[in-house]
Length: 368
Image (cartoon, rainbow, N blue to C red):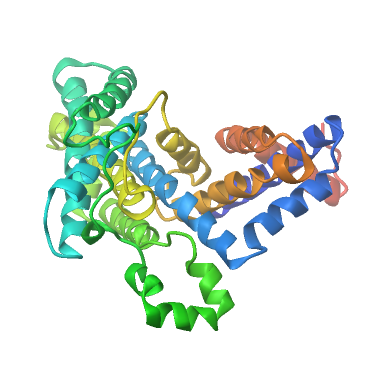
């Protein structure tokens, strides 16, 4: 089954790239040149690789969040709002709290994840206690989170004067790798003689990717080896059977969405503590939570598979963003390609039919 799922995903990616090439051809662009620009834009320089990982990290975490909820029979479309809540509360903790390095960052991440967990738990309570569909309540809470972010930025103690953003978090809350060392005299002297490492560390490389990997392993372990994971998955597979077996359905629904919310909040926290260092006024959703849905689908709702799926997604987004500036091709073709990949991943039976056709031809059988 896992092997078949991997084949389906691989074929879906190939088909997505083929359709993307066709769209480029129709638009009058050379697809080979376009994909070459993308590959160079991802792997052509060490700093491009770093930026790809940085861009991928938050959607890996939101992908894990959505995948976790899917594994328990729930659709966490509220990852976007949970991400926003995670950023705003982590930023406030990073700015207002006065704590020593490392501890400050850990506390800020914990607060961002905790509040986002409560945010996700609200959806769970509405579903478990009042039967409100989680999709509807999650979408409503996404908008509430967006305007809550903007409301907090009306406070003079938090918003920078004459700016559309907050004060920057304190350096003690940063989660950058070798952040202070890079700007020290010793660091500058060392990097001056090591171009590869200098380019690699030039972007705001941070511990977010390590956090994402650890969370993926933890979620995979919980779902596979722990009693809690068994109960959550049992509720997802068959609630009536789970209840008959003595599992508290309402409690597990709330817990599932709270954990999923905390993971999305952690994505927001790592983004603000390791990349942006501030939050700004939002006019629309940032898209990290919705991108996480696509990552989860590509990963077949497997938390470990969300890591390569998120890296692929981030690479396509980052490399595809250079199409317009270098060859004047519309970067929107990457969104179309990703959409096609998700489309084919979502209908594995069509992929099975395509592969069976090719297998039949290879054996010389007549395919009706």
